[in-house]
Length: 330
Image (cartoon, one colour):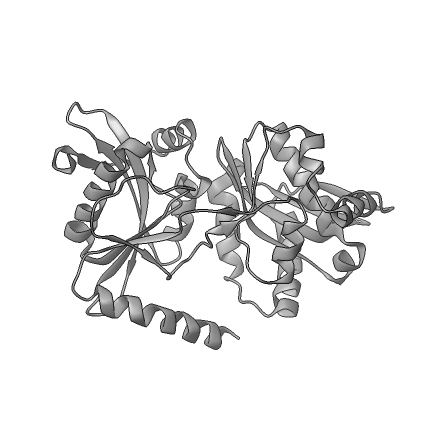
């Protein structure tokens, strides 16, 4: 029963990350992701759930954001919790009680890495106020290279070969801040061309440094200068695309095709089991992603636990707030 579950904070990075990695957790549950968020307006708390026999049955990295009065706080679990399906209800019940009592949160929102919803406690509701898009494309990297190639569109296979064979083109992993700075210049070009907003550069440097080896960046260079890049976050089981972009020359050479295939094969070589392309919508980038498979995947999406009578007001105001933020960033 939920009443028998206790939560305790974890302040040891190695212990926390070992648990996430050993139990199939998502890279957004790793310590370094929380550290980055904590440096940019959030508070990160790592919580283990213990049963009546004092055994750990789950964990969640909870991100807490202070909100204007009277809402107080938002509690959010990105791609978590890390828990077996048969204990999900117990852990979620304990987390919601904690979020109410410790943060005064108006809501606890989770966006778990689940394709099917396990039994969860009453009072949780599906929400349209998503941060991470549930529609995505996940490749099974246990398949052979030929099995991964077979469902690709003909155009994708052709461009994979052609763009990778261009004279003077090299694909390799970005190793230091200086190289990353050049990739961020490409990212700024991409954002300006496509009309989307970016964080400040410090945010991306923090991701790179805080996640470390769990956040590889791969770049296509032409004559020694990056023309496209792809940035991942990885755990023991999952590779998750974070960011990517290309400049005009990268577009001309279709460098993103060879780059994505390179990253997929690299993740397979590293023993990672699944490659998540992080979101499909109705745009050109998503259509490009769809060329790499003949299927799509849908995660369960966003679920909210109301922790305050003000939740109804909050849930109605949030979409309007997002629109205003996007408008001011243009």
